[in-house]
Image: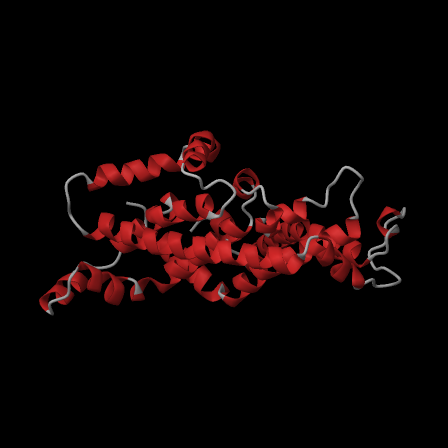
Length: 287
């Protein structure tokens, strides 16, 4: 081994590399945490505290009533339940339909399945805004404008990205599982529900988290389809704080923290399976 390689593998060099990596990760983490800390500070400030120069990171008085007042301004309980109902329904639709479609493409040999797979992959490259007007026209013509149906119905036709994930994950599962189940008399539905899906729990949890997050943060579709404010989800209701007469920033930040809370709870509750799912997808390889 050459002297350069010895130097590169020496404990001192490795320690310097670890310090550099740690410093780099610290800088990235600060850039992520800083906006959240600033939101918390403003949410606990008084009406004029956020305009102080220099800014205060720790308020002298904590105004927890900002959370109550901000929630009252947008009828938080109602819009929260709206968001929860929409997000749970969309998540169920996307996950179940994607599991079935992914299983069909990955495990059932039929003519044209590669073509269908490429079709789903190609649809991921199409911006959603391109189909917004024609889809809106269809739903308006059949009388579903100002309802939740235009948001809920497409979820039950699969998510192209989730179908891609399912296909890749299922392709890494040995086909001997299917053959053993067929010997016992199982059909494709039983193989999928009793063999493949139980072996894909990390993938399912990953899809649930991504689907719920995407639906919870969805802003454009509810804004386009829902005219009645009583049907608004949180994403649209929170945006209504920015009105013509200014914004109450402490109330706005307080409600934003409440808006973020369900996603944080979901992620930390399922973090173990989420990381396993991402690791499994990475190990399965792209075919």
